[in-house]
Length: 248
Image (cartoon, rainbow, N blue to C red):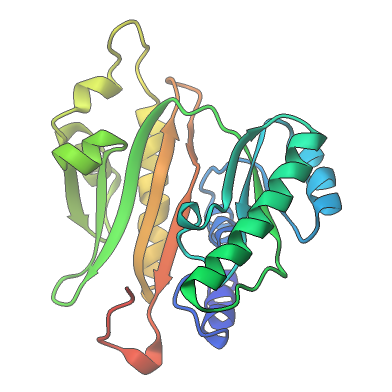
């Protein structure tokens, strides 16, 4: 897809092998992957206007090529409910990012400002990821998010491209699959919507093999019939001049 290629070219021209969050969301949107409403803002005034357009409550995140791990830099503010919250959050994020750069010994480009997104209903958190193996090429991963990924490592893999039957198998073969069927008074989750996201990610990777790594985490899986939302996304790409080198 031309949009993805253009974004990757821009990233590499700026010396980065990762895409910024709004770029990742632009690519997801182009592939029909459901995402919360979002915008970008370079100033506090713009952030107020765009937050109203997105709809409160909102989340603000630093948008900079010099900050990959936003939370480490104090660059994330959640559940902002009004104009005052947004102005205060914008100023704090800029101040924190500048301080983070000083501590790291380099300047942080703050010209892009912040990424704004709606504070989404979370439902059940799941993760969809992609890794690139030197021998087998790309594989897609699925599992429950949160502690299930970090502690239990309850995930499953398939090589890309995969079929709809493969995607359904992935969803049902993790140990915690019963949680998606509804437990403790919660209704069943929208597995059909989840499968469509997995297939769209598979297509994205097939058409853009220069993607080295992808994380959709968390994906908010809502009740049956209500869909799924990719809340956060990270895409790492291959530098054609440094093939074989790690992106980390």
